[in-house]
Structure formats: C-alpha cells, structure tokens
Length: 552
Image 1 (cartoon, rainbow, N blue to C red):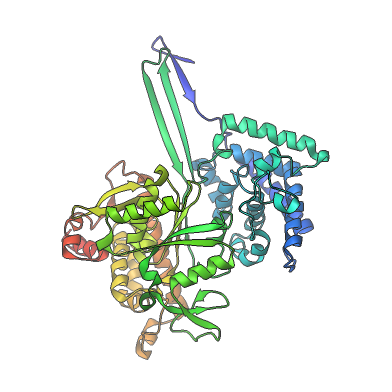
Image 2 (spheres, rainbow, N blue to C red):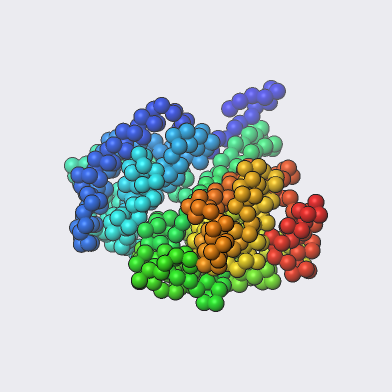
C-alpha cells in the first residue's frame, strides 16, 4: 500500500522473481556444470556404444536420481526457475561469456518442473558440453539421440510401472506421484513439493507454462475504491536464430531437440518442396545431406525432394510427421489460405505448447505464421527457410500477414517465430529469378544499415551469387568463370558472411520495434509505393522492392 497526493492507492505486482546476481549465479553455474559432467561420466557414459534400449533407459533413470538428488544441482535448478531468464540482465550476463548456446539451454531449463525428465537430462548433458565447447554441443546429435529418442509419449503418472517409464514423465508428475525418489530421499521429495507450491505463487510460468517461449508481466495501481485503475502490461518473447548448414542432415539436432519430446511435427510445407521438377536434388543417403551439384557424387546417393529429405530426417529421430501442403505462390496468399491452415491445425489438435514447423519461402512464412497467430490466439512456430527472402527477412520477421482487397499484406498480426533456421544448402533448388528476388532484400539492408555488407556484395558480385546460388551449386560455371571466382573456400566464407550480416542488419532494425510502436523504420526502404503496384503488376516481392528503391 502506498500513498499519492493524500489519496490511498494500492499496487499489484504479479510475480516475485529473484534478481540476477552475476557473481553468485556464475559460481553456482560452474559448480553445477562440474557436477553434471561427473554424473554423466559415472552413470550414463555417453561413450557407450550399447544399442540396448533397456540399458540406455536404466542409464537415464540412474542419472535422473543422481541429478535431482544432488544438492548443488537442485539448488541451481530451483534458482533458475525463479530467475527472469527472458530479461535483458540475464541475456547480457550470458552473452558476456560469449556462449549463446548456454543461454538458449538455460532459457529452456527454467521450465524443468514441467519438462519430461528425459528432456531435462538431455538439456543438462548438452549444457555440460556447451559450457566449455559451444560448437561441440551442436555435434552431440547422433551420439545423444540413442539415449534420448524412443520417448513413450503416452506415458502418464498413473500408468508408469518402473524406472524405464519414469523418465518419460514430467518432473512435477514424477515427484507428486512418488515414482522418482525412494524412501531414503523422502526429504528431497518434500523439498521439491514445497518448491512447486511456492512457485505457483511467485512464478507460475515455471510450473504451468502455456508455452516455454513466452512470458507476461504487469503492474497495476488503483485507488482504494478501485474506481480508478492504471496498468502497465508486457509480454516477453524468446526467439532464436541459427544460420546452419545441412539442417536436415541426420547429425543436425536443431529440429530433433524441439520435436523429439513432442513425438510429432505438424508441418506446413510449401507445395513446391514436394514437386520433383522443382526441388529434386542429390542427397547422400547415409547422412541425409544435400550434395553440391558441382561436387563429386557419393556412391550411396539418391535424388530426393526437400519433403522426402525432411521425412527421412524425422523418421531417423523417431518423430512422426503430419504434413499440410499449401501453395507458396503470391496469388494464393489470401485469407482463404490462412483459414484452410486453421481448419487443419484444429483437426490435428495442435496445442499452444507445440510449435508448428513452417517449411518454405516467404509466402508460406507469412500465411502459416498468421494462422499460428490466430490459432488459440497464440501458437508458437518454427521457420525452416528454403529461400533467401524467408531466410533473412520474412522468416525471422514478427509481421505475419496475407494479401487482401488487391493490396499487399492487408491483414496480419505481430507474431515472430520462436526459432528461425536458415540453411544455404536448401537454396540449391531455387531458380535464378528467385535468387535475384532475394538479393534485393539483402541490398536493401546493405543500403540502410550495414556498410560492410554493401562492400562485401560488391566484392563477391551479384552474378556469382546468382550463378552459384550463394555458393551451393557450381555446376553452371564454365572453367573461365570458376577461375574468375577465385578461391572456393574464401568465396564460400564470403557467401556465409553475406547471409549473416543481412540477418544481423534485419534483427537490428526489427527486433527493437517488434509491434511497430514507432515509425522510425529504415528497413522499410523500398516499401513506400511497391505494396500498391506489386500485385497488379504480378511482380515478385524482391523485384518490386528493388524498383521502389530506385524510385526512392
């Protein structure tokens, strides 16, 4: 209760989170990582080549008991649940350590109470590697898959019959039903139960999250009679962007670690990615990686569409696919297409904690993202970009939309993806016009945001970018052109740098003004008049933006 101008007022603060104390947190973090490494080494032994599911599940069970009984680790997890991991202070603390992989993992581990035990153990194991070797954590995919795949997605506390079943329960259910701690650890179980009860009061997000990617906060003040009320409300979103190669390779775990705990992936797919005339290309069947058309072919090589490659990836990781194929053409970017996606999501029973996977170019990113914004009023989604526009512009964009009444992007909502994956190896399927269309958006960002990007575009040359599809296909170059290209490795690095700088420039311009609460938006260069003539002229978006930049 406070007093203002002699009028009694009351204030409501909705949550009571801990403050981020840098030194104490980092000390506990380091101590906890050491304990995880010790437990993994003693019990799970990730070097073990055993394919026996019983042996693997028992290893996880013993690891779970050790982890959740350990005083240091339980203290660390309980603190993490109470910390504002989506705050600027927490982001800056971890970014100062130059380890964004750890930051990404910790943002998920905040919700350990509501995660399946198997998933928490996976995240802790990955964290123990990422702490000292950020790049090494990404290479753990295949090695850890044998331990963390094979989840029983129908398991609940009532049907759990033994240690093997227990690891597929949410932690809070395993504790409440007393299937994790034995009589010798009754005090530890009571400690966790008390913590659950307290978290319901001070940080319910940690116990009952609608989605692990989104949190809310607010502050309300009112007169004693509540006849006058003023409030400030906020929503904080977590979003991750990864520019990676061979996202659909078996050894890449970006998608697997999102969808393996769910058991399925509901996918909205650009119809061109299921068209053999458009996306058929060489794939190494042993690794599921796309092969550069200019490189020597592997002995065990097949020609697959991106849909086929994607389905092989999820089958390898034990994830069922529900694929909704939709047109990715601008002419079909209308409210009817959005509504069709909504009907399909309803039929499949998609939940608000289940990210939809959107695979394709800019049009699919826009309409499927818009459908996710409308479905349940907010459903998270992941973007796997297969075009340049989706990869560095429409994909990470918070602006989801569709056309209407003959005008570009007339209807929409602000709803960014929770994860954006940009993979140049998937651009091998694009024809030259689509490459030019995408480069226009990169030129836009170079003009308004990044001198280094502009100079790098001059160095690599748009002709080489188009002909090699950003260094992913050299089959169309003759000997003279290959010689003019220079060092292949340097060119490849430059292509990757172009994509990275374009993404960085876009995020700088966009993510601080997520809901367009002000109109200082330099990245709207080229969008002054083009929304009015792009559709009537039948132009690709990048071409329309390029002409508008010229007019401007």
